[in-house]
Length: 263
Image 1 (tube, rainbow, N blue to C red):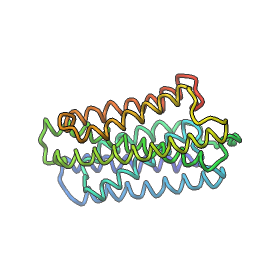
Image 2 (spheres, rainbow, N blue to C red):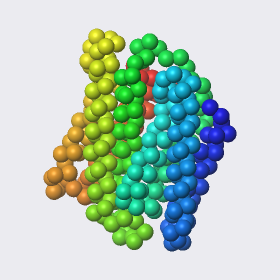
Image 3 (cartoon, rainbow, N blue to C red):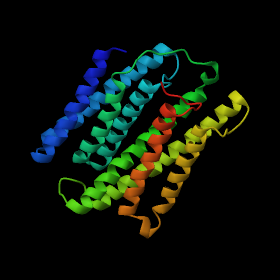
Image 4 (spheres, rainbow, N blue to C red):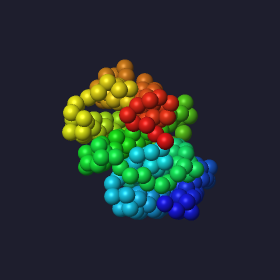
């Protein structure tokens, strides 16, 4: 993958983020529309780069730290577009895109080469497992961002941000969709493990923490119906849940020995 195109992608998202920041200070609809257009252009470019890598490799190349960060960034930008088109959240994009820049910035200095796929991973179930997993992670990242903004809005009462009921609705929707996709990730992973190794579940640390992530967000899907867990408490849970996601994704992959190492 061309480093020049990666830096162009980063610059596109960074310019959109700066545009949202300017929009917060200087309220002009044209600035928000230009920022949204830049994000859409970035998603198209990133989709093309991802598709090109997939075509060259012959499989979905999400097997190392660069590839997972790149795919995570793509999924988050795509999901932001979904919520922007659905709710017109605009200024909210500043925080979401800052998170996206951190993911993409972490990928930039890494090796972009594509390695050969080991036989155990050479199955469509592997691709489904990865797709459902990281798009689920991206929804949880969106919920984290909205949770932070919800807590800020409870104090600021700013007209520049969506109102609290809208932020709450977006947060709950992001959690619900992320949980559904992560459930499909777990199902695909279990079937793949059974075919590859003869068991549906193994007690390695990655699998155990993945189950903990699933249980945490299953509880959150239930908590939305309990009045005392709604609002600010739900926002804090969204933040805490994403911390569990980050540990499961990066902490285990980089710091501990597992069957899902990141290099």
